[in-house]
View 1 (tube, rainbow, N blue to C red):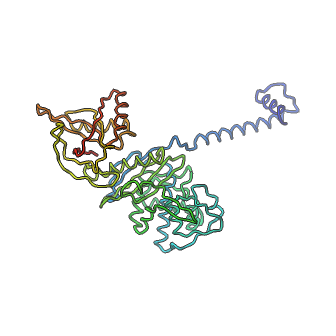
View 2: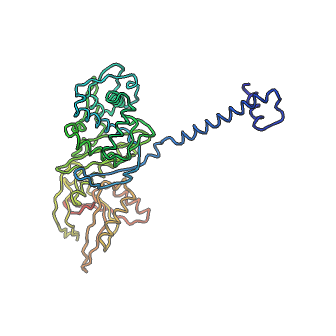
View 3: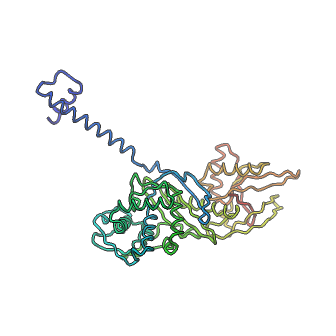
Length: 429
């Protein structure tokens, strides 16, 4: 039975109407069984679709780690399992470096491309079946281009299959203490079972620094030339944030924009991790803000410039003209009028209350205020009473005015303030 006749028969069977002829009973029963089965299949498919990861549900997580001591300086959702995307390639590279140090391969070793490797989706180097690629070029392609076809080539060459390689990656993760990480492929391409955390990725970054110091510098590679094409490193912090020498970016729609960054200034090194950024530029700005905060903590609350990494000097200063007595703090290095603004949101007798209030307010409009730092500026009145003015300094004028408009709509007192050149203020972590 086909077409309208079949549909009518099915409807009658389900409605148990008496108009169905005896000759058609068996056929109707068969159709009813088929439709019931198809309905069940459709429901399973629908539930599967609903269960698929969606970019809108990517979970934000971040962590900043003192690489020298292992001390966590900042953490939000650090143990929440998320999709690592191409951060996965950090472990792929860890496995390559291990094979190099054990003498199993050399930089000149050539790996042959299979049909499966050539079929991998972008981002890719464009490898063709039958061609070869050296270990050296494989490493550089993973670091700069984040090539998925190269990741699969590594997996097949070192373990025979990508599945076996993923199992070895997960086993290595456990050895390193990455207890909440599971790998299903070498590239980070979407797989519902491939999950990690901000804390685990910080552990992996620290392991790469510790276990493979002679290979680690490859993460600072700015560009990679291959067959007449130049591939630039996706990690823009290498060129925009002083001291950055790695490590890896990552993105799939289900994860959002991820980044693990390592920054060395003097004898200090920080590892930062961000999962679930809205865009690469926002992720980068947020990472810079977190790293700035980390360096301030390491330096006892001192501000550290994000543009040149210059440490600021402590010096107490009294500004008698304005009645401000700045606490021992720092001068904004290379004074920039564009960043010489801030906001004042209150004055308190209790200093700790002033600090906490500024932090609470900064969380209300983080996109406008996360580039600045919280401080309190004491004011001594004629009576001898000290008021601590709660402020957020070192933001552009436009952001200061926008932030105040938003806060005032929320019934929060706010005043834009200009930071005079050379004024000393204490940056609080």
